Image (cartoon, rainbow, N blue to C red; front, side):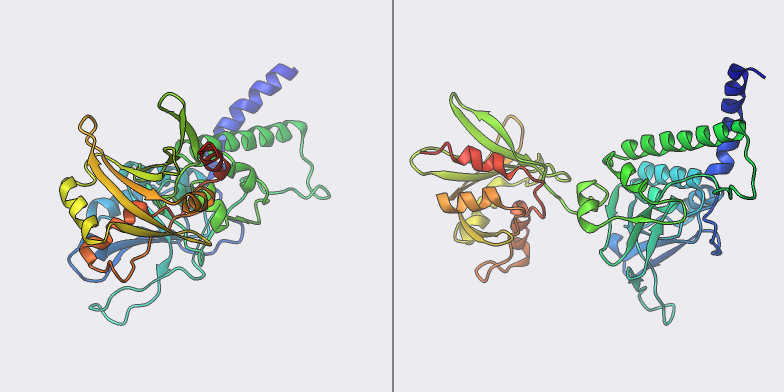
Length: 380
């Protein structure tokens, strides 16, 4: 058999064998196939209902989930708890989650005293590993508790004992082609789900019988956990004829923050709210008036008072702009901050007004604080 014919035979054999390779569960797996069930508080609200997906992902799991979705619905979140299973089914399941706009988290049903009591979801010791981890990436909203485990690893054929098994060169080529095919499927899926491609090298650090667990910081940086409205990096944006502003945008709600100075020591932090966030701009302004027109923004190591200068509506876009004044020292603290956290103060306790703090809350700012600091150094 010539080399060319051997290569062609390898490709064909790899294509035939790929589904079997992707469907292999973990060697030590003894759990039952994944089952889906409903849970909740018993109340009549969207957030009062949720669902569970627990067990091994098998080739039949996507069909089982489709039937569950049609009969019961998921509620506001689907909790996963699984040690893995079929990679092909896991990728299919993840795509179903994304298509249906399903939010996912990691947890399991702890206990239930009777049919009338509320479910208790437990994240401690919950895990979503291997194929489950890739299914998790398909969630429209993904929340990873620090108490739960999300683990990735390589997908490959069972290792061979070189002392007892003889493997031909042709078999080696087939195994290599199959592993490369797996890699292509996984990387394409990661990018399709909007996850950083940097995840794959991390997953490849662990052999098939071990796991690379994702830390809280990695989950945010890789966009695995998108439950918080984290901000993108600061960028320097031209403003006017000779000016610059530092601008960043949050990932989920699309709020834009702008930090700049207007000469003569006047520093500003403005927030541009997406169209439709506030239907009554005048009402928003009146509420800020009742607050005394100031807010306290907390960073990781400082507190900065800002004064509400104006609340206006941009007629062309329908966006609302909240303009604040801040001292030069406060502006420098905000430029260096890794987070903004505006908490309710004593002067501002009414529940219907507390939502205004959400306008300024940014749980995490992704690096490049030097850009914001450089913009402020232009102030005279």
